[in-house]
Image 1 (cartoon, helix red, strand yellow):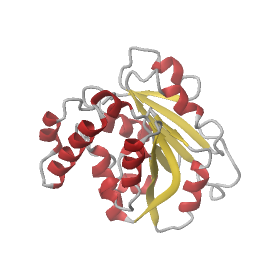
Image 2 (cartoon, one colour):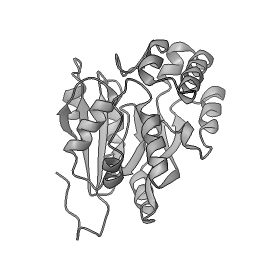
Image 3 (cartoon, rainbow, N blue to C red):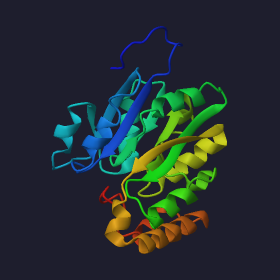
Image 4 (tube, rainbow, N blue to C red):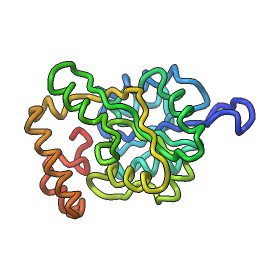
Length: 240
């Protein structure tokens, strides 16, 4: 349960929701990045049947919710179990800045703001990580994905029906729906995410694949068909 902190209207309560599937190598650092955030908050790990140490790591700092596999399903299940007035969805390999919660609360002082995301940063230095992170700084909702962290008022989340339960691009569909529902805040605070997909497949090859998938989506191809062109689809493994 969320810790109490004064009157109900005094401070925004935040529920952090982390979808996991065999994330023992990354989850600990993500949880550590949350422990010094200002209260009130809670952490919910929505796990899809991990067979490694993920659940054991999660139970040290979070409430664990079991879910069917699929990141959208997991995040919706976590949201259903959450108590906060604001839902903050964070990938298991993404670390938040110590000032992240304070920045979210400042943004939400504007009643028009319904949702927002952090600034993308990778955990690896170099030309390609720097270039890709720089490209994502444009204030355009089509370059906002889940690896940046996504916060949303619970009322707005419920109004749009949660994450569409599709096998891929659920984060982009949600961001688009939220962008239509009210002001979307682009925070200058970084969210540091793993470079692992680019390291595994090569920075150019992975980015070409990402651009191809996004182009297909913007041209109207449905996610369940796009997934067949994306071999590492998160429906099968969240290590994609």
